[in-house]
Structures are given as structure tokens and as C-alpha cells.
Image (cartoon, rainbow, N blue to C red; front, side, top):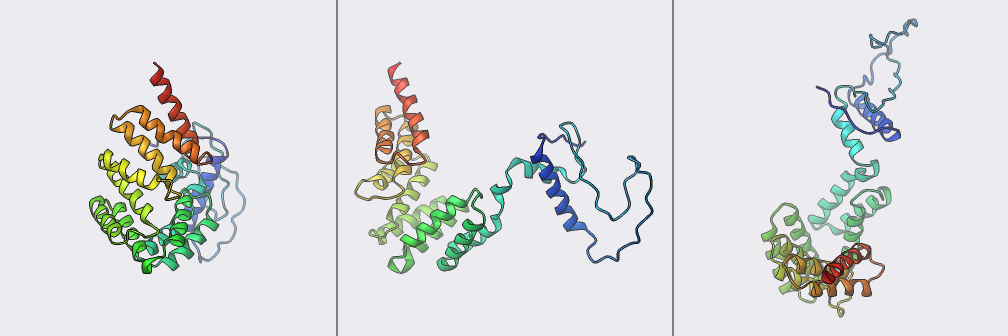
Amino acid sequence: MTRRVPGTGRARHAAIALAALLVTAAFGSAGAKPRDPEPPAKPDARVPSRTNAPQPLPILNRDDRLPEGYQDLVRRLMARGPGDTLGDGVFALAEGSFHAGAFDEAGGRYADFVQRFPRNLRANLALERLLLMKDGRDFGDEPLRIYARADLMRAEGRADSAETALAAGLARYPGTKLRYHFRYALAEIARDKGNHAAAIEQALAVADTSGDSRLAPAALKLAGDETLAMGGPPERASGYYQSLLERFPDSPLAPSVRERLLQIRKKMQL
């Protein structure tokens, strides 16, 4: 039974048009000998045309059904905007170079990705990678290699191995420029494992005012969130959130943190 696909208007038409182009590209008769044009005939809606001339795309309404074979493709296209995933392959190549330790190659690929696909959901991560490689080329790139390997381990679901690698790297290179990135990654791993106290400890080390790390806003939010998650005093969590708003008022995290802070204060007044 063919499912109905929600959505109307230009987004639906664009999705179906793209689906038609993809199907044509995959299954079209490229290189085939052109056929002689057939004499015009009275169109019959019950019989599909057998000519090679392109047929106009249907204008679908809410209750129309999609042709068999288009459904899954159109559903995926309509679930996410065209700028969300365009360029994913380029990003994957850049990530592969980064995790392999080919940082010059990775930098070129990340830069190309950001310039060509600025609307992709991974554009911010690509920019962070560029900043990471710009700032972290000390000790012969060894801390950066450790961080890249640990990042790959986390992506593969080997959080314990990543934690061990990061802790060992931090102990070996305590003065590396990437020490705050090491600690923030350790905070995230501890958070994901439910070790709230360790997550807060690592996050506060990142947020230390003497460090001037660009990860400090995220670290303060993480410390506040983990304080609440472990059942700690709301006043303490509020202090972390308030510090974020005072130190980094223009942070993209500020609006959500401000809302969270207001909710905590309302509950404290009840």
C-alpha cells in the first residue's frame, strides 16, 4: 500500500523534481540511438506516453499519491532542507584526513567544504576543526594526533578507549594548547557515562578565567546542567549559568541559558 507523504507547495515540487532528475540520471538511456518522433495522438490519461520526450512533472496536492519508487527518496528530501546535507561527502573526506593525522590536507578540505556548503549542518564543526588545527600545532602535532584519534574512537563508540587516550595525552603534554579541548572532551565522556562529579570537575577546569578558552561558555553550561542532573543545589547551577551570561553575553548559548536560569529562579520562589 502506497503511503501518503505530507507537505505541499514549492518544497514538494522541488523534492519531486530532484527525485525525477536522480532517477533519470540513474536509469536514463544515455547514448541510445534517438528514435523518430511519433505522430501526435490524442492524450489518454489511462495510458502512459511511450515517447522519449520529457513529461511534465505532476502538480501534487495533499491527497495525491507519489509514483512507486519515489516515496522513500522524496520523504528524505522533504524531511531536511536541501542545504542540510549538501556536501556531506566532502565533509566525510575532510574528517577522514583529520582522523588519519593528515592535518594540512584536512584543513584544505574543511575550508573548501565551508566555502561551498555554508548551509550544511556540519559547517560549524568544520570551522571548529579549522580553529583547532590552527591553534594546536605544538609539540610536533602529537597532541593534535592524540585528540584526533580519541575523536575517532568516540565516533566509533569506544568511549573508554578515548578517555584513556585523552587522559594519557593530557598527562604527557600538560602545557599543550589543546589542554582545554582534552578536558572538555573528558567532561563530555564523563557526562555521557553518568559520572556527574567528574564532568563538572573537568568542565570547571575549562571554564577557569585564567585559561581564556573559547570552550568556556559550553563548559559553564555543562557544569550547570550536570549540577542539576546529579541533584545538586539549584543555587550552584544558577551560579554557573549566571557566570556564563556575565562573561559571555554574546554567546549563542546565552538565550537558552537565560531561559533555564529564569525557570530555576521561579521554582526557587515557590
